[in-house]
Image (spheres, rainbow, N blue to C red):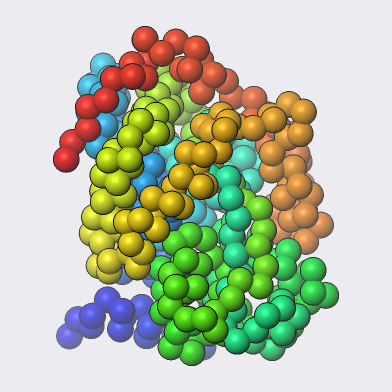
Length: 362
């Protein structure tokens, strides 16, 4: 007999906990979603996205409806196919194995994708903070011994490590429970966890649900559009067309409130189709997050201060000290990934890349 999705996930997690195999959870989630993963070097441009995150899911919702992109790719690759994932760390190995050409990733997964030299960083998708949200606590130090929901290898995991360290704690002093970020507010409300580390809209949902929920720590974080290096080097024009679609998406949303609201509705439809649950934020809340975290960031989509103060360097150094990066990881590989100039080339030639031509499916 086939169990319901949530029951299956709950039983699978209980089984994994019993075996001490929490890191296998992403595979369970992927299999439970019943999705066929892309094959390496397929004719399409395969894009890994996270529809449950804001603003990342809003950006990908616009890009995947971009008819200008699809027509441009017909010349070489044929089409762009967007594949939804629960979390960024699921996307990274598929980029490395060339099953995906493109990914929208948080800062920690971006580092994991680039330290091996197999990916390049295109542009900024978000610049904001991730948060540790606790119930009935006001300081990080009060989380000692508490149950904390987190996403292994994510930007919020990085924030959790920072927050615990600020209070003189480490992961051995708390109980870490892997959860999908979309499940965290509900788990907090039900008392299954005492806190979580997550990105929007999870903190906004939790704060709106109860006055007992508070942000006890925030960490600066960024999301990035990332290309597999093989894709950028072997199909340079296709890569530039994807970068152009990214630029168009931001420009279109900036042009009017109605465009941005439409993009949010698309994101909500994509999230519901993927997870089977509605996103727990209002359209107005989602619009505010997209404006604050992306559209009002002056430099976006360009990566800010690329030369004078390299982004990701602080995260690299911190995670290296924590032993969270692969053995032998070198900053020079990330620095090389940041030198990819595809976005600059697209912005410098707006007519060729049709940056002001907007044609989106409903």
